[in-house]
Image (tube, rainbow, N blue to C red; front, side, top):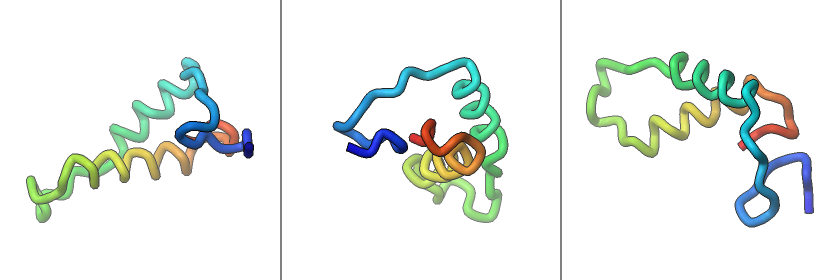
Amino acid sequence: MDIGHANIGDIHLQWTEEDNLCLVNAWLNVPIDFVIGNENTARDFWNQVAEEYNSNTADNRRR
């Protein structure tokens, strides 16, 4: 098991205050593209949030 990254079924990382702040910042930094508008699916949006979160957190805290 690679404990460097959280994979479904491997380990469960508890969210720290720092993780929560990083997630909020990621959520705020994902732009709303008015050209795409409501064509962007929820899955696409949250994938973008996850990418932003993972790019700004420690390797061992990635989700």
